[in-house]
Length: 109
View 1 (tube, rainbow, N blue to C red):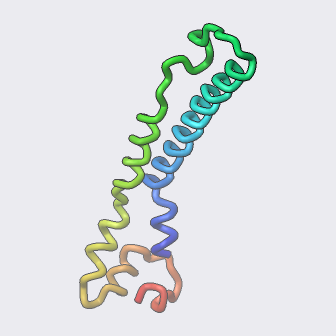
View 2 (view 1 turned 135 degrees about the vertical axis):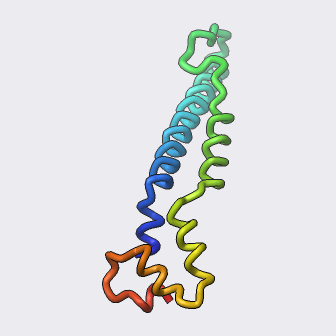
């Protein structure tokens, strides 16, 4: 129940989704640029690449920012868990936070 609440948190879902989109965009932009570079070298031509899909696009900064956001994510459910765990009766407190769980004392202890 606790792990499920963490994995299903809205903050985590949004951050992971954003990271996937930015990583995909970075891969497309860098892959396209690398591919066009190889084609130009293979054909030994000097075409104007300014009208290509990714001229001057630097997606590395967006990807780095998304990774930093993911690494520094703050989950509200973790704040509740961090308050409950140091208590003497952490199982009871965790049951209050996650009341839907059936008899999961072993999982919470």
